[in-house]
Length: 111
Length: 115
Image (cartoon, rainbow over all chains, first blue to last red; front, side, top):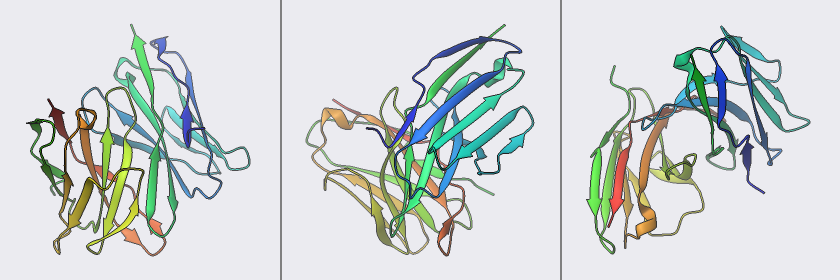
């Protein structure tokens, strides 16, 4: 079983659609959770951190369920510029910090 | 304020050769992590350096080694290159605050091709 698993994708959606990404992690000792965005042939960039209380940043909402070891990202009113790969990221402290990325879910938003 | 920088941007090597990749962290950051990203995959954690020591390591063979300098910059060395080492190598910097690691910021990466 992979340490961080994401929906395989790709997701193809029209502009204005709502799209949800799901992610599960296997290590219950995981401490920090993030969603990163990666454009083609570019470096990953932080989209948002994820907290148990849930957090929202404009059209983006992230949620963490520690009991189920599940992370989600919701994008409302999709824009063409949202087309990218979305990476679920988990970090844990085992004497040093180890950061584990999911394989990513590719999103295509079409006009 | 310069972000994370990496050099070189591209590199072509042949099997069996050795390569050194370099990273300068974002100003104020003291921790550097290295990742390997194969095409179509997420980044895979190689190791993390803090206070000039390797603090955490992923599932990579000893051919992968690193170093952190007093100015927090870092090098990744790969010996005896294999075709499968062809990938984008990403460096990320962050700041450690006690038992908490702040957000990691990534450099643009070095694309390594092994022929």
